[in-house]
Amino acid sequence: MYVKVSWSQPKSQDEDNRKVCALLLFQIVKDKILKLFVILAFTITAKAQSVSSIDIGELPKVNLTKDSLKVLHIGNSFTMNSTSYLANMVKATGINTNDMCLYRCTRGGGSFSSFINCWNDKDEKGYSISRIIGGITLPIKSSATPYNGANIRKAFTDCKWDLIIIQQVSNYSHKYTLWNKEQKEGYLPELINLIRTYQPQASIGINLVHASYKICNNTDSLFHLIADSYQQFCIDFGVDFVIPYGTAIQNIRHTSINTTQYGFSNDQHHLAAGIGQYVANAAYFEALIAPRYGVSILGNQYRVDINDSQKEECNYPDELIPVTDENAFLCQKAATLAIHDKFNINLIK
View 1 (tube, rainbow, N blue to C red):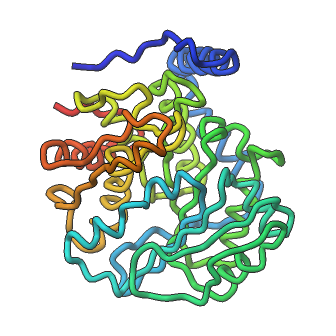
View 2: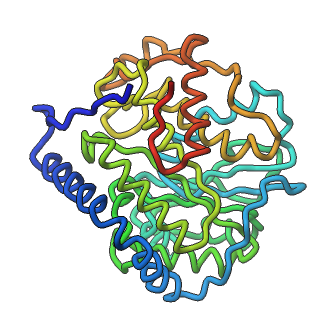
């Protein structure tokens, strides 16, 4: 049965949150009414406006089964949420990943525009780079300082990537019409152009982030706007690789194991340890690892315990739910359904 998500705003939410939620609901209703009449024209127009503004050419199609695979993920703390358990999940399968590598390039609150600023030595924060899984080691320094993008540039000039995954910061993820503008929500064309200039052989993918209660407590409405934004991005730029971990999170939020107030979030924004991060990582595994090695996340034996110290350090300890033999398959199912239906919520029967 479909779980009804309450529109009523908790008393603890501030007025700005209410305004955002109201705007999101209005946009959802408006979009549904107009969608059947304008979708074709919108697609053609949007593609002309966004893609024709820069000469990106045709993007290479992703090939996850090539002899060696080098992946770079450019993102933020949500990237860390969705890759925190990945190495343990891979280890649980016994897969030998010496023929690949996944590097994570992250900055707190990182957006398309902040990465461009970092590249140009203008970002007030530093990006850190680390290898998450795989046996291939590349000549990359792990940390960077504010207003210094030397290590980022080196990762592009001294390494040859097969797949570069990007993502928009959560606050702007549902605002696709602003991604192409020269403002804080934008600079997507510049980022794509930078990748195409220095890594022309690389495919481009995107990490579809989860809907945050901090932005709006009606996460279904917010998710639909995020999904629409990411889907339109894929259409406009010819991107064929999506990690729909945000879809997986919304799937698991519509199950009986979601007894939380904030949808498995330790601060109403980031995913909590346990089920929240596990489901996100399961989707990441199913998108990247499963196609390469022919091993699904379904049946994976990695589990996550929650200890007392984690609960003491968490603002909302009830959001920390361990992954057990009883709920692991449901978590894995939420992830696999997201892979097969990336932009829609799936109700698990």
